[in-house]
Image (cartoon, rainbow, N blue to C red; front, side, top):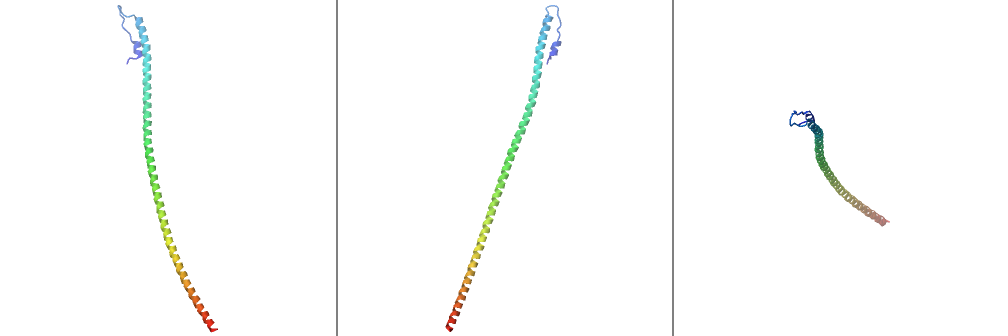
Length: 150
């Protein structure tokens, strides 16, 4: 690419006849150098800006990829936590059911034992009642015998 310095330093050979006016050519080259310098500087600045924007774009693409992978990881972790919580909830429910069943069985066993105890007490009461009746009858007989003797 031609630089503004190349244009500025360009010299034309001078012809004696039918040649260009040196002053006009120099003036034109000066104008051309000035415009070309502006354009060259602008192109250089734009290239620098494009490079910076490309670097920024790459940086933001990296951030985007990181965010996407983080989001995927967060979703995966959330699913794992949800599954673990469900397993724990199921375990707690199963333990509660087992405990309830055990308590019901213990209460049923206790009820059976109390019924047996009640039956035993009833039998003892019946035995006691029969002994009392027998004692009272024997006492009554004794009283009758005593009254007969009198």
